[in-house]
Length: 337
Image (cartoon, rainbow, N blue to C red; front, side):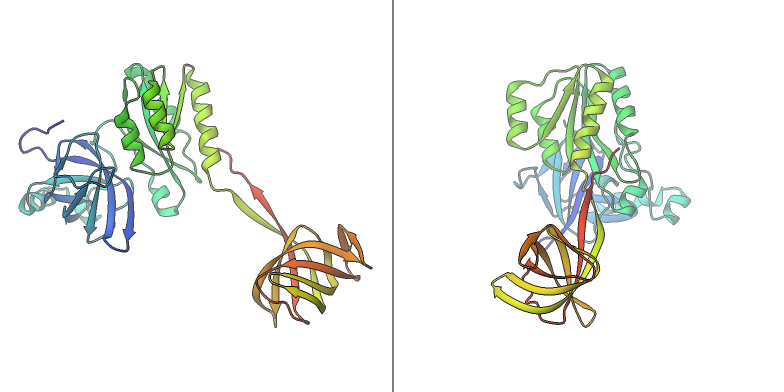
């Protein structure tokens, strides 16, 4: 949709990264108005010229209307994900807008509110951008405005110290191809459909694009299913548990990455199906996986402290006599919301 004459485009940053060829690059979601090539963008208290403007498929465009995800490149600095932007036809207009900001906002480097005043959406918390926690993007479609608001409020409550939630778009009506295009412009995104239709062609496009759609008729069941999807996508925490230490006394065989070593268990136990750090003169020089443990030429599950053992180890680092193997196992801990 076209903006009124003179009305600046407004929106939010939904992705930002440094491109080795094109410099600082950001994906923007236009919430209102029309963004044109050569517009001047204001992020916070910084001005940027739109030199490269592309659609979600990477094709050059001259303008983009509301609800459109677009890519801009060649920025002098990298904006924050979730930061609001406003576009102006020329630099004097942008500078006039910045001068009109309250003194407190100017002192704090421009508008601090994210998404505020940019349509029916809400962005990640400040702790999400500062702490580096994953931000999960959500597009909501509901049957009526009351349902939309209820779903949005419940989903925003999912946000925690380990997970941020950003509502990219929220409205009534069926899920459309435009929603899929918006989802394609960012990462970790889920479309939530409450009591609305998802046409087979739209669902097929979502599946081809690897975009998840969670649909339902019961609000709390729907929110629980969204939480389950997000939990699957949260990077797990890897916990290391030290189990033993072996001093290498002899190397029997080395073929490629597989090595057979003999040693004495000095602490804990030497156990198969574990990992090890290879230390030489107290410095870690490599890592390996213990595939098999033997005691007196018999294959066993583990060998205790004070006993000698043979170890089949897979490692790219050649092991030598005198090395110390610090053995540990890793526990994968899935985070819950």
